[in-house]
Length: 344
Image (tube, rainbow, N blue to C red; front, side, top):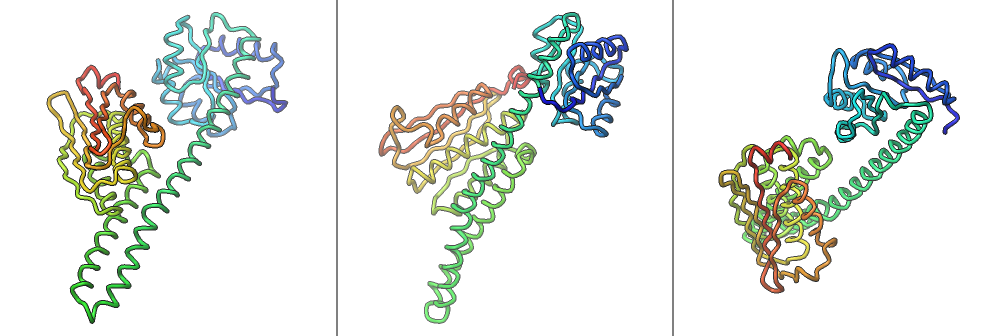
């Protein structure tokens, strides 16, 4: 274990349990500083005042009870690993606590010094790996956005600038041609603006959850029309009662399908539908492009696995129909009954 002392915060309203944990830390010969709080609010305050390395959390406190205790603490303190202490020998409850944001759980009636030592060591290492992976994911996302900015907005603005210069040259001698060029410049800059709007949304993922799905899809369509001379037929309607995970997954599938239309399909026409009939929501994106053999295409390069994974996460049905030379249809069907909404 690290030779530096470990700062342990125990949030527990039972003084006897606090003393027991303190004795176990001494028995395990853990170099530590121990902080104690009898309420969740006080524990959050202590985290703000000290560099805490690990939190031992009772989920039955005077000001918070059950799994809400974990979620409330995690919302306030995201950088410190949490181990739940429970008086119930219930693995299901422990796993639910882990799903809510804890790194591990311990049953009070079975804790001993060696178990506590091992738990602290493994929990801190596991949390370190999670944070490292999150930082790597954030870096990869920034690199992806930088590529998108270069590939789409920069090239669009370069084309718009060249057309604007040409229109100035043509203004006196060929006003009709100059007028056509200005119209194209307007279309390109409009698309670039929409593309920038989408990239800014990607930089603030929580903003994606604030906008209605039909608004996000309409912005996607506007952004791709700025990159490509593409005729898009739009039949998109507002959808009620989508949970945030459902809305985000549908948006990502639409985004991937439309990107494929731009990058691979070489199509001149695409039709985008978003409809709701009672409890069923259907998203469909069809193009008249070159198509492909679904059985032999590189799933990774075309993002098909990404779309399937997104659909699977919300228990939706994804259907991809395509043949060489006959275009592609991507359709996703989602049941948004109250029962499914509760589990989404």
